[in-house]
Amino acid sequence: QVQLVQSGGGLVQAGGSLRLSCLYSGSIASVNRMGWYRQAPGKQRELVAAITKGSTTDYADSVKGRFTIARDNTRNTVFLQMNSLKPEDTAVYYCNARWGDIYEWDSWGQGTQVTVAS
Image (tube, rainbow, N blue to C red; front, top):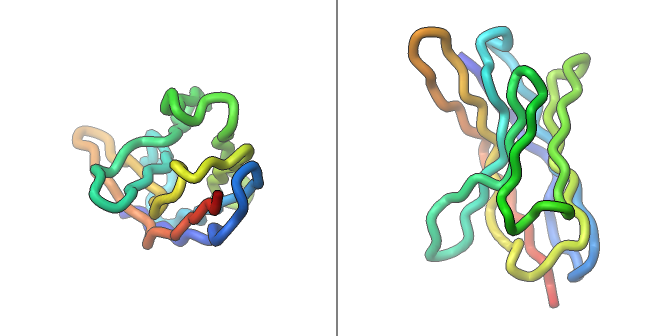
């Protein structure tokens, strides 16, 4: 299994920046992809950014050019750098690990609130 512990987030003014961190542990070698999702009130959880084992990245159209996902393998940590934040970025952000060999499983972080004030 893979365990995730998030840190970061909080309240920021529009146009500001925040960085989220996600420390992962456990069956690290079986992790195929790390990602960040978010869920705003009344909306479905959506993928914001992801990075594969081969370091390929993918972003939601709404955050391209503003958010950057990165991984530090020496610290078993994934980061989400969020710049030029907008009020519509307000949500609870969740770290995700997709892992497994024959079957894939999802592990989730505890979630962290990001609030962007206008």
